[in-house]
Image (cartoon, rainbow, N blue to C red; front, side, top):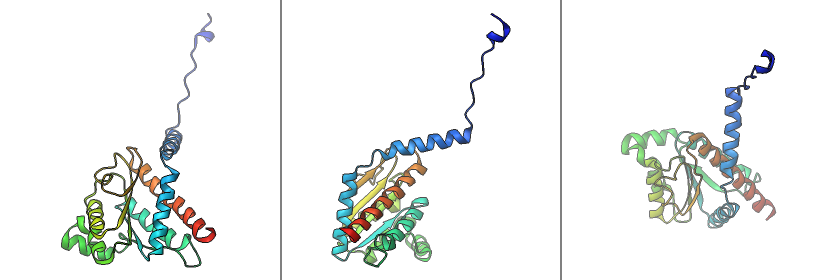
Length: 203
């Protein structure tokens, strides 16, 4: 064997950023296969029933999930029916004055629950967005919604946390990754927006 023939070509090294991108897209794609269209259909029906009864959709979350809640409130206010026959919706994390007042005076765990106590009624729906499902203010919000007779829904990651057995309907994605958990919130929200648009404009 010649020296030329004995040389083993080095294995090409994956660029770390390219690898990260490809792995992230693959993981997100796999996680989304857990989404059941019948569960989405059920939630669309719940929201249309809420609308017919004059109810309001309340959304809440922390950090990136809070931003997603505000984003989706926009979509449900305008995107589902640009002419104005949309959902009544409020993101409970949107008012910084209210959040800092409640956090300072009665504790961070109560920043969403107290707003529901003041504003919400039995014809309303609570949608919680939580990666872990364990945040104290999310659990308290669900408990307050239950006291009011509201329908509760959660979009959850990791193992679903304490929130999973508490909510009436759980969209649980078993993934140990906060960023992908937050991605699933927006994906479901956008599917809901398109489905509601379809029902309200062409149903």
